[in-house]
Image (cartoon, rainbow, N blue to C red; front, side, top):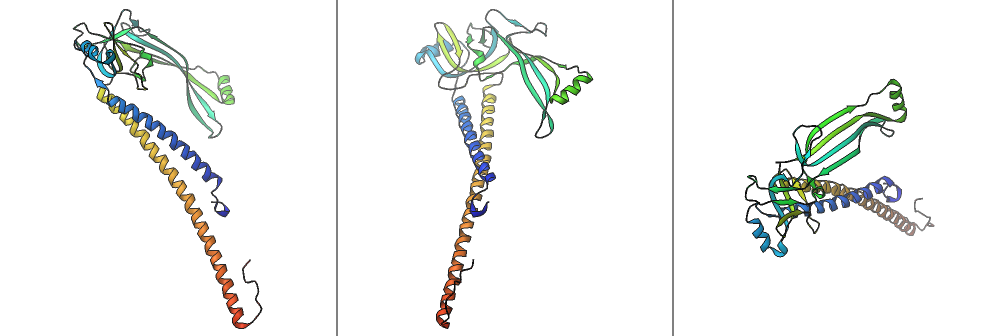
Length: 300
């Protein structure tokens, strides 16, 4: 606290920063809470012969937010793994990621840095079918890459370390960057994998489609069961709530500290003024009793 009871620059910066962070965290918490609440209210439907009848009777032949579980089956073509023999899927993601160390001039430490330098995703049309693949019912999965969460299995991963000469090492220390290597990864959604789909379920002529929902709800294609998926989202809500409470408490504590200091400073000023007034009145009273000339008794 600076002289005059004003808060210091550091206290003002901390208060403003913590207030802004609290507002951001609360906004994220509200959004995550809304997502989890919507997911909890999603309608569970079974992938069986009654599904088409349920959709025909639904308003607009549509269930706005539905949960359905099935096994992945390709419609026509399949994607073959580039690295694993006889591994077939419907989604393939190939990634090259650079790993290096970067010198931090502030902390004087080498920090890990990762950057995706190339990524390619291949997809082919696929359905979700019952586990026994009987009955002729299937749900076509639309726009799978729009899903907020999609479960891909890592089928291949290899790290290619950088080969460095002595001259390269000296140059890296001068430039502040030390390459570690390139990581190559292949991820796939395998044929036969079990998926829990959460989205808009629509009957389009005779084709049942699962597609991204409207009204700001999240689209999921997860290998987790519905209860596990819901628990995962609720855990995220709790985490953001705890962070919001922590930063909110820090903001309130800082504000209380500043106001308390200002209050105590004002009380001290009032006490000093009161003492000066009492001292002056005492000198005036003594002057009247003794008949001596009055002098300014206010301390300087």
